[in-house]
Length: 186
Image (cartoon, one colour):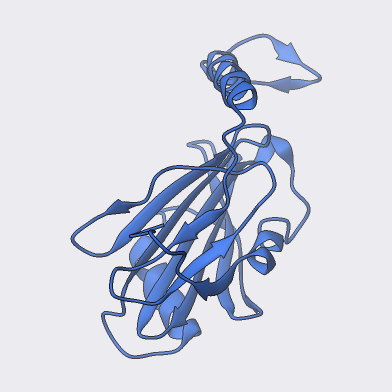
């Protein structure tokens, strides 16, 4: 363990991790790389679009299952993974959430909250470390549109202590819109 700070004992490696994230944040800030999120599945005339303040997104990547994109908000420590792929089975947004939750659920979770927010169905939960102390708040959100499952996974260190529902708020910033001209998967 490392020295106590503000009455909290931090696990070994947290300070080194924070320094690395801080250096990366300075590089991204100076390069002004914040872009809007736009992700489209080839053959579809629509895309998942939106701008989430502070989120830096990667170039979309084609996989055998569909299209994926990652994003980070260095300041808050948020990590986002977005995937679009043809629906493997019929069902509404809640069905999508329940199937993905069954497949993606970590071995140990705390404070599980299932619900809906607009066109999205979600599961919000905390992932504990080995001692049972929550270290990450996560959100698995799903939406079904035009035969496509849209999957979002967000995680945020609990040391940030987000208010209940804070991870759900950006869902309102994401919409379905037309694919931009000249954009294959973006």
